[in-house]
Length: 420
Image (cartoon, rainbow, N blue to C red; front, side):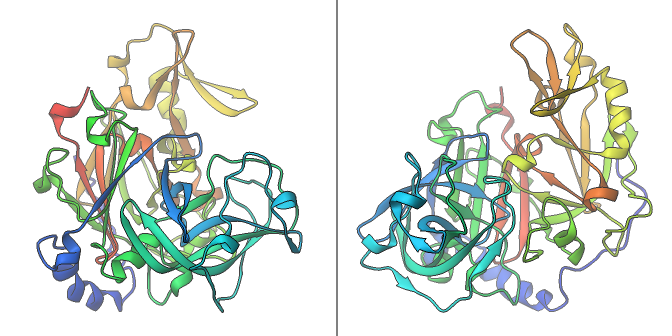
């Protein structure tokens, strides 16, 4: 069930080809150098904003809960800088976790220029800057000295409390980005602490949380081997293919702009057996090859099965769903008592070579009143740009490998015997 239209392939960046050829065989093979075989498994718990896990920063170690974000850069830490001063009393609301760099004997200032952020999903409408320092970061029992980290510097007092003290970025590192773009785990990889891969899976669709160490999700930093979770022979890798259009597409249009995302070409979709058009029409914000990108992100903005806005009406019709506007946003409700087996599957084709299917039981959520809602998110390529975030709903039954050496995303179905 492959789309017969085959758009021309667009390379990531011309000079990356040589980099991949040189590094792929050595850096990503878990059987090579000793450091590449080291890994650490970190359980994560779900939250409305995205997965959370624990690490430590500084000396002595300051424990910190961080939000995992595949579109963020270096490790963000909440600091007591705000309004032009440094004051925990004024800048840190009660109950807010933060990092006190003045208590760390290993903290160092850097000469990197500050970066300003005009908007983020965890503090909407709040403008702030980050400065950069260096300190020891420990992921599990793997510690890396001199890791470049971000320290928040808000222009005003922020009273909102969020359930984490940092953001753990996992965006890919593309040439010629400097260390301010390096995720903490990538810096550990460069320092020989462990391998270049990050593996992630959720236990939401599994019969047990055993493979997530009793938690909601599990991230493996270093060497990803699969084992009992997925069959390594099922792992398909996709070269990331970015263009400048991504930095102009909401919600990726941050300032300053960047385009280092885990993005691959989204080349086909079917609702049941009906093919969906992915063409955006006369699009003011478009990629050169006129093919939308699937941007992988496990955060809140990637919740819901991605659906092109042009196909929304067809999906609502075939599922007999109605659009309901609430204070929390738009919902798509299904009539009570509807047989989920009558609903269509959603199938996605990536880079013209592999299909992945979301079952109705995955894109439908149950309500307390016994009725259902569609767990979908419509993406308007004309208004938002030619991209969609592929997050937890799409990835629920898949194992994901982010390979920082080859700049590839790997996907494999979780073992059938583990599923509910």
